[in-house]
Length: 228
Image 1 (tube, rainbow, N blue to C red):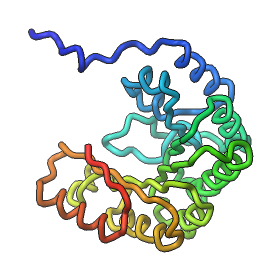
Image 2: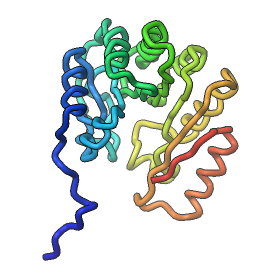
Image 3: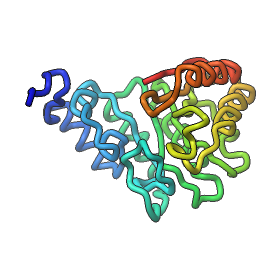
Image 4: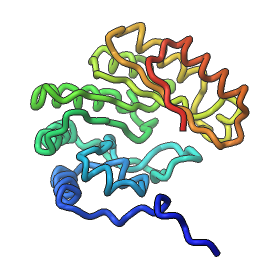
């Protein structure tokens, strides 16, 4: 059996900055994608002061095939989360922060107001930090993503994830054309917002399907597209 190449092995997270980041995250009762998704690169990112914060708890109401976050009965909303997040960002001296969340289909607004409060609190405490949000699709939550667009984050990211044919398997409770609609409408509501989306490959899609998704995203006027 051949040993794994060095580049494939993630080192155990250590370091002064890593420990500082960990302590601040715990002190302010925050969740991160880095931890919940068991990311092997957590040590490298946190030592560079890069972290993706996950709001609205640590339990998701959906069970997408690609995600490692726990599914079940969600946590109660923490009313102090936006303020605590802003304080942590200030202490970490972040120039840019990414805020994502679990899906909260149990909430009337899908958690949209919590995103808005986070944007507002960060702006109050550290106005120089640019804010990128990575939201769920807020399916069947009228006015949810529209309200976030009005709140003017610097970047609105919503991942399309996969090609339409694979949605039933990969994103069983999501709708491809709704995600496209979300991205298009965010840009129309607030043209100043930089929009992003991401597409995973290696799930059984064809080259032609990938090209079609790219065309669809360009038609939705998405500013930046990642494929990985």
